[in-house]
Amino acid sequence: MNQTQLEYFISVAELGSFTKAAKRHFVSQTAVTQQIQNLEEALHASLFDRKKRPVSLTEEGAAFLVDAKAILERMNGAVSKIAIMSGSDGGTLSLGYTRGYEYSRLSKTLRSFRREHPNVFITCRRCNCGEMAQALLSEDLDIIFTWDHDEIIDCEGLQWRKVEESTLDVVIYNTHPFVNRSYLTRNDLKEEELLYLSPSGSYLSDAYRQKYIDAGFEPKVVFHTDDIDSILMMVAAEEGISVMPRYITQRINGLEGIHCIPLAGTDENASVVAVWRGDNDNAVLNSFVDYL
Image (cartoon, rainbow, N blue to C red; front, side):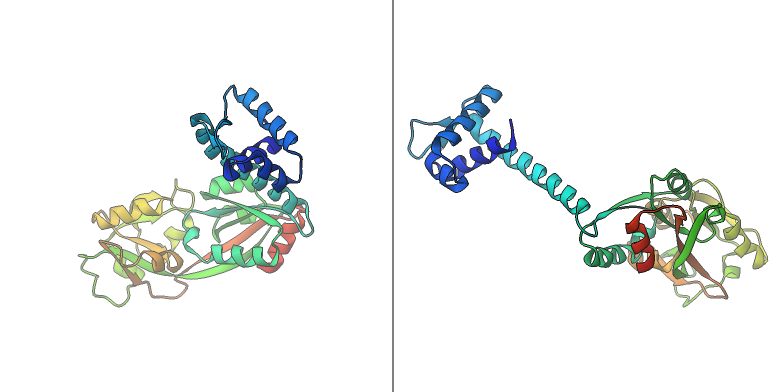
């Protein structure tokens, strides 16, 4: 079975005629007939009822038509993708981002970059900071977007650039005593049980803990994960409260059981950085970094 056979089969099915299909493809009717016969032999099935006029599909032919169109579409898509990647200003960019950053303006940035570089193919992977760091160092990813206190930025041979600085909000349940406050400070959270959005998913970062120590107390972190939806579910269930960047909370404020309040104070923000290998000679990466 090949692409030509599929194209001829679909044309005959749509036009109801071997002759019309031959004219569509600028070949002889004999050529179309032979290719269809070869296809039927490969499938061990008769695809057309040739006794009727116009020619009609058999039950097997009708079933195969759906698959044939899907197969041909995927084949054409694969060819187009390779043509794009190998064309002028083409290439690929493998990108990783920390969980939660999908709520940010990243998609808008990628869309704008693609419009300026239409022959570039971008792949995206969402994972925790540890997974991203390993993928970047092993060259499975060209560039990653992570939090500015991620240890990866101190690794030798890497370059990084701040791409976003977001204010912070306190995420509470809508029956919490703070619900009518216009803003909160770290000190207000002294007695609160905290659900920590962890970059790694597995430990409390020193940078996060230090914010509370500077406010004069040790934070009561009762749970940590890199799964935003799990934290939101637990907040709504009144298991605790959380602190999240505004690029996340602006998308979730107003969800059932959820209320967000600005966290006021000096340096109450979260920064996201782009990190890449300095020895990566991917031309698309260089263009993307310049674009950032």
